Image (cartoon, rainbow, N blue to C red):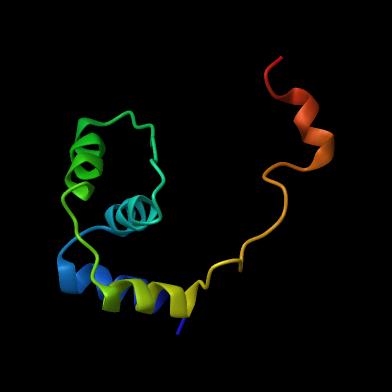
Length: 85
């Protein structure tokens, strides 16, 4: 399946891949706080809050990226010393 499944979903809903990702994060019960330098992207991010994902949308996303497929630390151990100081 791969990334083409995500692009198919964005075409069907007429949204960007970023909007689909933000809606998926919101569906998981989390709040994403994306940064941006451009007003256009801020407006896209805000528009993502109005995107409703159906059970079929979630199933299609999870078929490509099932829960738990991404694991591990966010940063390599040798890099954590560079955070916050």
